[in-house]
Image 1 (cartoon, rainbow, N blue to C red):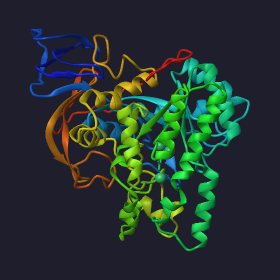
Image 2 (image 1 turned 90 degrees about the vertical axis):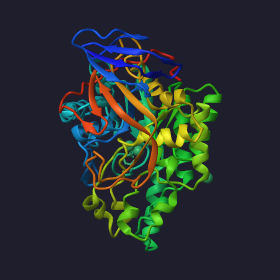
Image 3 (image 1 turned 120 degrees about the vertical axis):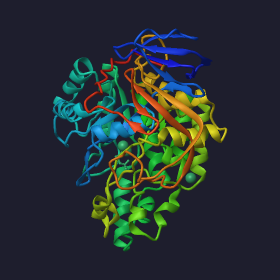
Amino acid sequence: MLHVKGGTIVTADRTFKADILCDDKGRIASIAPDIATPTGCEVVDAGGLLVMPGGIDPHTHLEMPFMGSVASDDFFTGTAAGLAGGTTSIIDFVIPEVGGSLLGAWKEWRGKAEKAAADYAFHVAVTHWDEQVPKDMETLVNECGVNSFKHFMAYKNALMVDDDVLLHSIRRAGELGALCTVHAENGDAVAYLQAKLLAEGQTGPDAHPRSRPPTVEGEAAQRVIALAGLLDAPVYIVHVSTQEAAHAIANARMRGQRVYGEVLPQHLVFDESVYTNPDWLTAARFVMSPPFRPRHHQQALWAGLTSGQLQTTATDHCCFCAGQKENGRSNFTHIPNGTPGIEDRMSIMWHHGVVSGRLTPQEFVAITSTNTARIFNMYPRKGCIAEGADADLVLWDSTGTRTISAATHHQNVDYNIYEGMTVTGVARRTISAGRVVWDDGDLRVTRGAGQYIARAPLPRGHKAV
Ligand code: URP
Ligand code: ZN
Ligand code: ZN
Ligand code: ZN
């Protein structure tokens, strides 16, 4: 048993002083002021700290094979790094080979994730369509605890699906009570622009954002929203990075469509100037898709989060070390796309969101855990501090500071995009399933302690947030 004593609890809807008692099954047993510590129970002093639901990162790529490399953070190191930053659950992406079995890939990813230190769930990517895919989708929803699928509108000749596949998959997911998530970029337009830039001799990382301008994302976001609207199905757009996509989502919601949008902290913090760094590797390390944007897009993303038109934050944590980024030294289209960040999302969002006055602490909880739990049907087990919920908590020092560095982070990657930034807002302790796994610098994680989160189908008309 664990007694979290003297903290201020912050949930998405209220802030109050109370103690929390966690039972030996890893759940919250009681919440009340001044609980008497049961005999033999470990006490955690939360005095002066905020006690919030552990973060949920709904977008990670741990040990993902991608663009000729495999992402360097695996399910153990990646989830451990998340715990060090206050994130206690992830939803990772199962990526079947094109033409390969969805069910087979899900089983493969279950195997890889057995070493996870924190709880995890899976979205399963639909990368092609044939008679077997809708059957596998049914099995995944009804027997495997999967209630969300992923679609890439970009990465032509690799993971990209066309509108025909999108229509079939969104319709099937709707029948099954699952939610479709989408990487919205027009893959044909990207491929066309990449070829044009290469033909002009533009081979460096600064060509990356030019091959994926904001219109490429805006068009795809509008298109998938229109397709989902035709089918009366909900849709969740991952890593929204442009004003165009943010406005498309807000407009659809105003028309009554159930559309959700996810924001990455890195898109709020960096702009496209990172790609013009004269050091090739420094610039290449920022190559991810969608790319970093001119500043005015960040205003639109913040407005979306404060207004509630964009609901979640994630990291798209996808780590490639220097040797892997080097694959694209002479051709930017071969730089493996992805940036790390699972360990820093909570601090970056607190510093730039709450300390700056854009978000309240309760809104911070909503966009770092509660909304995600609601949208993906894990609430109130996750994203919530209530009796019976999982005892996944972060004890947050709202005024403490730390300087982010690859020299001290726990992510298995040789750089940190936030290198040298000093942020206010620090995870002092992280509690996962009722156990202290991060104690002010001391990471006490256990390989394999993470549990698979089976998620039930969404009821028809599920209005999450
Ligand atoms: O550049 C990125 N985002 N890499 C990971 C794959 C994806 O598109 O999410
Ligand atoms: Zn993506
Ligand atoms: Zn613009
Ligand atoms: Zn991703």
